[in-house]
Length: 211
Ligand code: B1M
Image: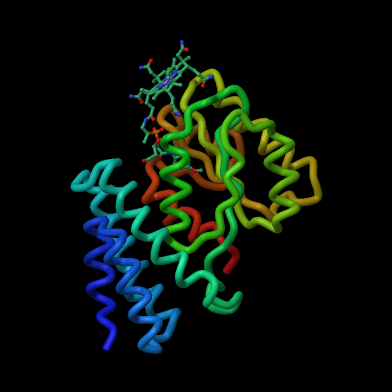
């Protein structure tokens, strides 16, 4: 019988080959795919997120766990139907115009993928209109913006303005983050959400999804 708890434990320890092997074994044994995702991979990733928030885990541990998650998801994703992954959404993610910092943004992307969100990563130095255009094309739920420089934070406001000018106003939510960014700033520019770290970004993204 598949041991889903063992998948979660190996994921927390970042043991990618073991996670891959255990997920494959669970699939071969006929375990429900949604159950493997929820009670194996996602349960482990939630623990990683909690530990990261409490400073019990740091960036390297999270990156290693996220890599293990990715290995497991590579096996599960083709087996999951649209219905199975209902409840998670699509995030178009990027670092704003003029800003080349991407370590935090990549971490946010991995954690979102770890929580079974679809992530379209546009990279760094992304123009405001590009975020809106791709979000429309991909039928995204959320645009996620990262900025690490005080000088590039205003580009976040440009994305909100660009979205408000489009016919997607209110339909796509904007979540922002990055070292100099605050909740006050999110309120000031009319962003729908702010998250201080990658684990909180997952919680916030879930909160922003339509009910
Ligand atoms: Co730059 N840099 N940098 N830098 N850099 C900072 C940000 C700085 C604080 C350093 C300093 O002076 N003490 C400073 C900014 C000052 C300011 O504006 N207040 C600075 C500067 C000035 C610059 C340059 C202008 C330097 C120069 O050329 N004179 C230049 C700008 C280039 C540009 O962007 N146009 C520059 C360049 C670079 C490098 C290219 C060398 C490199 C980036 C490499 C890369 O990213 N691929 C770099 C780095 C590495 C840093 C520091 C050292 C580290 C940033 C980092 O990766 N942190 C940084 C100083 C520091 O922070 N100690 C600094 C780790 C990462 C995991 O954290 O990105 O905060 P962070 O992400 C967190 C949260 O913020 C949050 O979750 C993440 C994980 O928990 N989060 C989100 C991030 N995005 C989110 C999005 C969300 C939600 C949460 O929703 C969508």
